[in-house]
Image (cartoon, rainbow, N blue to C red; front, top):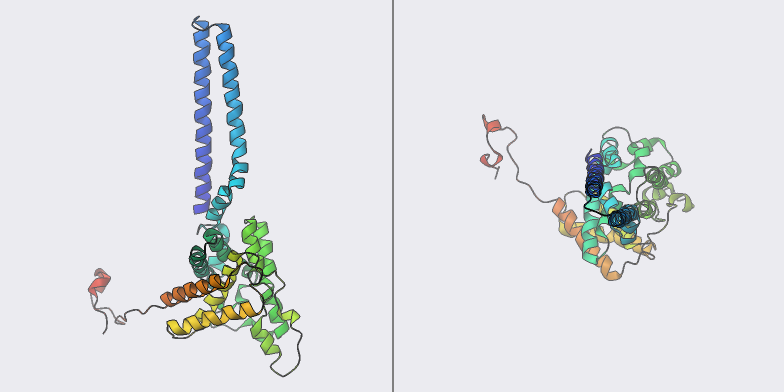
Length: 325
């Protein structure tokens, strides 16, 4: 996988650097010793050079040892780790693509949306993208219980009560946190996994439970997470909701898509999910516009081609086929 290849390259570079320094140091020591034996250097001069070389070696060793600490303090190490987990060949992303392809495609789109909005409002775009890529990894535990992974087969929720369905749906957050910790994802990404639904209501199954007019306690139908504490977590929450809302729409134009994005965003705001995120009203408005534009672009129109290709078309480039008017 690409991630493993990157690790191997980094390890090879480190080993080659260490080997080069070792060989260079050995050649220098032998040269100095030869000069001393030949009488070109006095014992005192050789001793001074030896002390200097020893000091240089110690300083070099301390520098190598300090690199991880300096990287962490500067944030460079965190960014490198985020780049690593965003690699399409990262183990969890590969697993998500194979076991829950619908969730994978949703997460990739949400990542692009969160990244674009983060650039516009000055948030950490790399963290927003990484958080969106991994926000739904908890669905790997039961992928078929989520609409994006369901085919024409029977919906498993048909045999469950609304309470049972809500329990399964909300469990993907703690399942994702546990999986992220087990796979040693960055803490900032795990925080986004834990916060991406906040304490939102699982509206569909709550309405199903109250359809007969009974008064139902909301608590079992709410996520037991934490509301977003950063703008990046809020961007992922809104990207998750907006992408799902856009996907649920039938044929529609940019106006309908923007209305849908604004509607799900308003629901999160009025429910208090964005109150601790640091998102200003201006940030939210920019985010709505970015998400609506990206979702509209995803639904761009395409030319309709003939159902049956003319003889010899397999040898022709696509530009040689006439689009149907």
